[in-house]
Each structure stands twice: as C-alpha cells, then as structure tokens.
Image 1 (cartoon, one colour):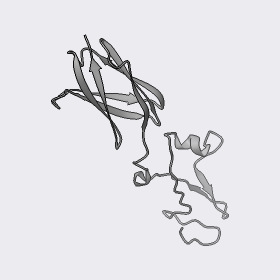
Image 2: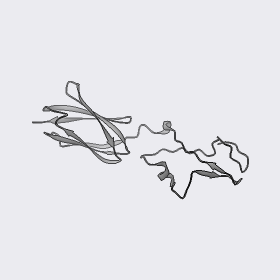
Image 3: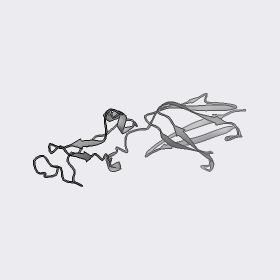
Length: 152
C-alpha cells in the first residue's frame, strides 16, 4: 500500500493491490463485473477522478494446475481414424507429437483448445502403417503420454 494524504491519491502509486489465482480463463471485465455502467475510474474524497489501471502478474499464475483432464482415445486399437477426447480447463494451444516404437518422431501438430470437451482427430495419413505408436500431448507445462495401436 502507498501512503497518501487524506482525500488525495498520488499519481503513479498503488492504492490497492489484489492477488488471486484462477482455475479457468475468463475476461477480467467479466470476473470483476465491469460493463458499460461501470468505468475504469477511481474517485477520491477530493472530488477528483483518477484513472484505474488493471494489470496482472504472470509470475503468480500456477503453472502446476492441469490444463487437460480425462484424456481418452476412441477407439484404440483403430484402423482408419481415432480421436483423442479430453477436457480443457481453459482456452489455449496444445501440441501433439507422434513417435514409432524406435522413438522416431513421425508427426507433430498443434490444436487450438477451447474450454470444455475437445476432440483431436487422428487420421490414417498421420499414422499410415499398422503398428504401435506413442503420443505426447503438451499444453502449457503439462505433458501427457499414451499409446495408440493401428491395425489394418
């Protein structure tokens, strides 16, 4: 907190600092209930209007919270197409990497995540031959791994 004279807020000084963690992505205006009837201003007891600036500190974000939950493959084994089904706790980007049994990377893809249930379609063009494949999904700091079996 900053020191201030009674009724006056010094410019470039923090008057109120809030720290909180969130479990999901949302617009700050929605979380705070800011709409057209509310503006980003502070009002001092000196009848002056002061600009309100809202910032967030990325360092406070909890990088350990999982983004992807309940990851399943449908069907597995598969012959032509397979889906990865999972729930995302927020909007963002995920990357998937496929490798063969020798550990060689076969393919990499990116996907835009939407909060809620997501499906990642895996086509036979990505994994053209019958066999065992491994996948690694990365979203933020989270890493998930699994195995797919392709049959003819």
